[in-house]
Image (cartoon, rainbow, N blue to C red):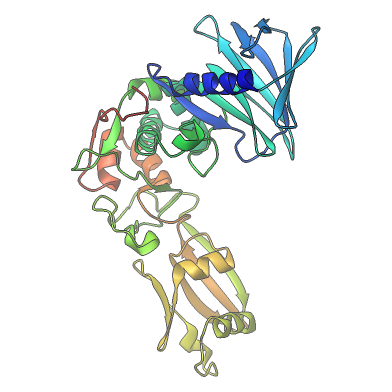
Length: 382
């Protein structure tokens, strides 16, 4: 028991050590895997079980790691298996890449750089990738922003991703990692081979978006604002001086600028009744609602209902929509896609295509900010 406790404490010490320009990301965070297969793509790794059983793992060698009660079962290909409390797979060359295939509710496989730490944790296998910050940022940009875009747009997304990292660096400090890889933090599906994205991360290295107080901002973004962004208090109640309403002419011809959908008139009236509407619906035209500029509430006579509630209940693309009764149907004519706060991705893409650089794009969507290096945070990347 004593050796088991010491091995776990040693692993946590490794996790919390300050390594230059590295970050700890929990991978496959929403998959709850019970087992995984590790393989080396480039370089070689040392497998450390904090006991007498250590291996050098080279390309072509598979390592199976499974949760076994409250411990781990580890088996290196063509060797015997062992039971241990924790596993650390450390790259030995400085240019090491590995892949992980997980098994649980779903099967996934991604590639990563850096090291892999494994621990059993409440019915799942906890996998933590310790990697270079810029490799992580490039992976986030690929996951959040796609590929095939203008380099200045990729730089914009890289700075946004890095801003999130530094603002929320201690989000999972109690769990011994910095961030997770799903939308609870930032989407991260491992390494990207997109050279434009990799270059964008490196060319903006160390840059984040800072508010007047020099603290990294809440760098919110969405797909398309429909021509006008929303102030943060209209969506999340809390007001931020840099998340103001911005008129955006750049996204208006983009794919997600406009949308239409409809429901039956009787269904719409039933929905409104359920939401507290008590007025006479005999004159259906009174249910019409026009939204030329962004509002917070749908209004029909004296009745009012938050637009974000309607969006959530009906699964609409945005809150920026008008309502028109047409015969037995109700037509929703909408603009934009997403919550509308902060940077409009399709607008930023269009700006980049028109020759704006990433600093100009950031300054357009976030009010009163500047791009610069962050203040190193205790426990975070140095």
